[in-house]
Length: 179
Image (cartoon, rainbow, N blue to C red; front, side):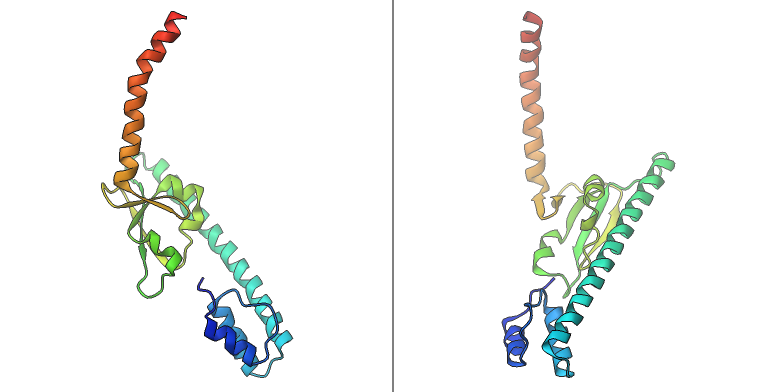
């Protein structure tokens, strides 16, 4: 969601708008249009609140749809006994539409298990996604909302943990046996 521009906010004040500051550029445009069409400042703000409530309902419905989609994929994978695979999703920015805050997801791999825990990631409307059968060997990986890392960094960290466990494990076993 793109914030309102300074120009929009100044124009609203010039039109006599005294209500709550709009949450987005789109909402500011609606307020400007409503006031220019003859609505009072209060009526335009009530109309904006109505649009906000409708947007929340649409987002809830969209998130529910994403959860159903993921549940359906999970069922297909379970029923296909390994024939249908979905390791995750390749996310990609939609040219000219993706907001600045969502650009981190461009060309990132979203693992299926992360998508199940955070279906809102597949619900980002200005980022597209494709199903992938295998995890890519390089690139970016989404770990949670807003957290995207380079796969090489994630692999090297995991590798260190595995080596550490293998090195420490025999000593722990010896200490346990000795006590």
